[in-house]
Length: 156
Image (tube, rainbow, N blue to C red; front, side, top):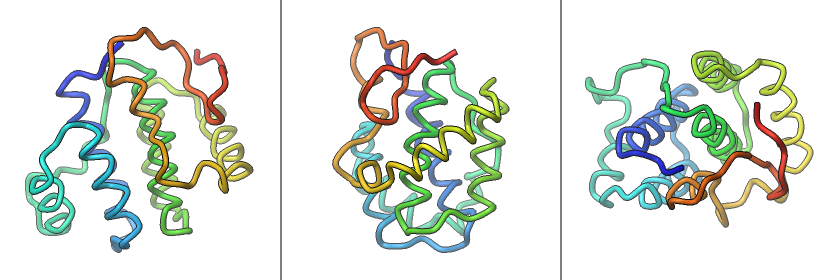
């Protein structure tokens, strides 16, 4: 399963909305968002402008991202946690945003809370810029799991 261009745009936009929620864009968030944007195939100038104009962009609506496949939404939440924790803080607004996204994409709130707990437990390993969860959906291989430690964990 491969991300469509619409899903790529939704992914990037959703992460922009996430970093916007605490009203501060840190250098760590900018760095990670630039990497994500490039990974998703966007031009550097588009990425930079999107980040720099985040608070003034009238076209960036607060609509909750909905993906074409639930597994894309699960990957988004994992990368969203990377972005949210990149500034070493996880605000109530960021949690609320990720919860709304999970709900809109048919993801159980308990799964999300378990995932956050596991993410925090393994944050030293996961909170690096060395990898992104979305990369597994940028090729044509069929993927049926999302895993927080690069091991299979069934998604339902």
